[in-house]
Length: 359
Image 1 (cartoon, rainbow, N blue to C red):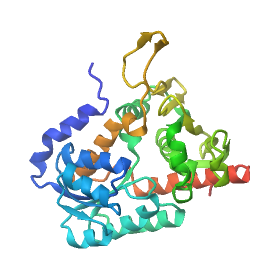
Image 2: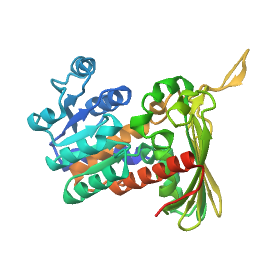
Image 3: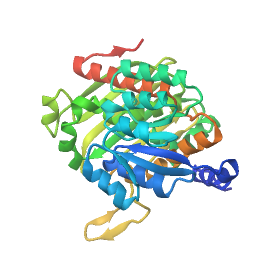
């Protein structure tokens, strides 16, 4: 039997799209850094039904890249200018985390559909404001970039859970581990990103809520700056672990590390009453095994985009599909707020050295 891992559904949607609408969704992207460039290339060349019409960045070199590499004629340094002058249907935000909320609300107020990378806001007040504005614009698509929900392996695991294959799930173990070479670069962004729990574990929090179907009740976080002492100086950490309990008694163990030397190592395990699902336990680049003077080994994926490149494409396609088909995405503003709320509770627990109970 052919198993639908996410790609089959993705391809079926591509085949029927143009019978729904011959009008491409005109998109303006904001932010063309390391991740923004990847998103922009997907929107420009790979996402069906999308027209990447404009790009905005405060870095002139990034705008030059958009003009020369992507052929985008309309480029802007000022976000408000792009909103007012470009004839757009949607905004795709890959800007600094501190700008996501205000840029989302401005775009929504202009009648535009919005995709925002996580986090939706850098504090709960911002997230609540975004939620309210989203509620006032119910006909528009608002999409939070929780990419792991769209990775074929993770979406297939969710399908198996919903079908009862492992019984009732009660425990999630999930981790996000980045290559050490990015650590020193990340220190400068701690004040604006919110720290390791919001920067690394927002996806793990979202997955735990998604897989267990419950809301977080308590968190107890521990960690430290074991490799890069610079994180300690900004009241953050380079390695952490959190014990999380949910309102219905279920549990999650969520870990993060900035100091892996083998590659980007994200994996998740879901334990149920009748079985266990394990996703990506070995961060293999492919299925090739190398046997040489170093022994037997597999090469690893290098960064998060290489690991989730399928998910990023499916996610962007789903955003456009939701607009063309007039439906809501599976991720909502509420999901963005919940993940941020739990992330801040984890940060408080780490700094205070005690269990935090969420209201």
